[in-house]
Image 1 (cartoon, rainbow over the protein chains, first blue to last red):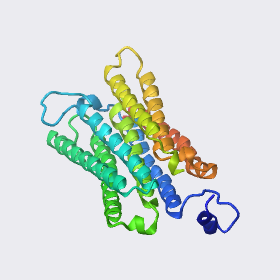
Image 2: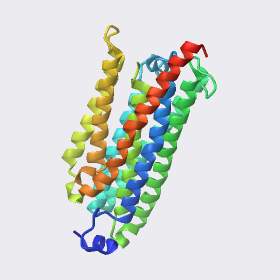
Image 3: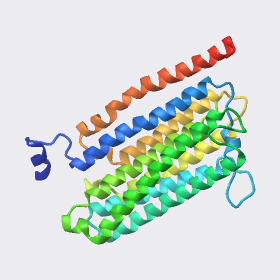
Length: 215
Length: 103
């Protein structure tokens, strides 16, 4: 379709018609899907072998600044924040494709803010649960493995959100510098966008495995 | 391909994700005790796969890529069928063993 893609593959037509960076990002995401898959499936395996398991609606019912118990209220809010930041990321990628620097800066900035709010929410939730006595070695609601896997999986996901925020920040600074206008390609925005959506995708499955499934 | 991103489709996906999540949470909280939990879990997994489809197809734009790329990304995921079955069956069996031999 375009000349550069043909050059890169040195043949008549490109099988993927994507840039090198984007292809490598997809390959990385496939491998990362298996990393998260391994964590979630080992969690499922331990859970299947346990005699009892805590009811997530009971464990995750606290909400900051409000003393009422809202089952799953806070994590649902965190989910919506992540979905909203995914939407702003799509808009940033779209602005990048249209070579609209102001749009990229605006929407990437909103995405970073969304990611930071999510991280802050997770920090609050962790603090709250540790105060309640749930650590990697103890769990007042049942088997300690619940706490171990909770901190392992949400921590690993949180580390992904943090690195996503840092990557977005780097791209934002480069966009502000006008690097992409000079090179004429906003491809990097799309690559970090893929990573950010993947983080959102993983959260959908963490949400299912940890907060929703009850049997 | 850049032109393929329309604000309309982005907003549709946003509302799908939003509403499906609300439905999931409501089902998990208000599921009647007398109905088997297996049905609930089936629907929760189904709804999660619907959300995953929309994120990957629309947000990650995979639907609009060339077919070889789609196959390259999705075909390794078939391994998850073995992965999930093997480990969940093993965990369940281990749970039974613990009860039988009283570990």
